[in-house]
Length: 255
Image 1 (cartoon, rainbow, N blue to C red):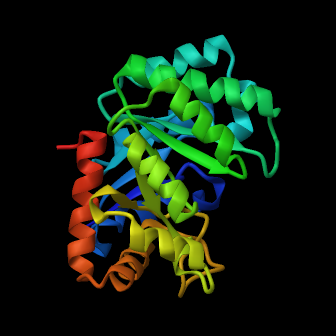
Image 2 (tube, rainbow, N blue to C red):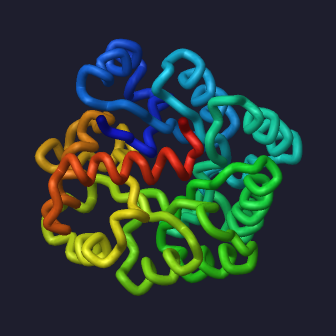
């Protein structure tokens, strides 16, 4: 049974069939899902989904795109949500210099603040990083993240960056892009990283893996990520599914 460690079922692309789709997940082999927040509203929706579906858990936090909106009041509300029994992480948080939808200085400040919030809440954190690798590493080092403190969501870094992250105690989550043609860097990273430090995810509705690339993503497609990892590492698919699931269950403290 599969564990999709990162999805966004609060997204409007699921508005027409959300309940029908989510209700079908157990029969499609999906055992667990973490729905990640990107601002206060989506974090609240993530908790609502976790309350409705026994197999969904929530992460709450501010995506770097929305960092400019994390007021002191919003921070307090996120910390309150973090006390919910089905909230398992602060996330997704981090840096995104591709779109710069929040000023970079604000992104850095809010990223560091949310790592501190995760420590305060006693939860791990989920990191989004795009075109901001050095600053991301600098903040993680400065904050002293520690073992099992964080996971790099949809990690697309090099083998060298993976080593730095792994040495810090971070986990690496692999999504649909590992199946994309000519994605040599991610394939090389997966070949290098120990299977005991990997998660699998979809980032639904985004980043749909081959052979469904271009369609709306959903958690049932996380199997294609597991299949690609198995191919890269010369492992049995079910072994990859089981190990990555257990890695994530321990990380998120899900019994």
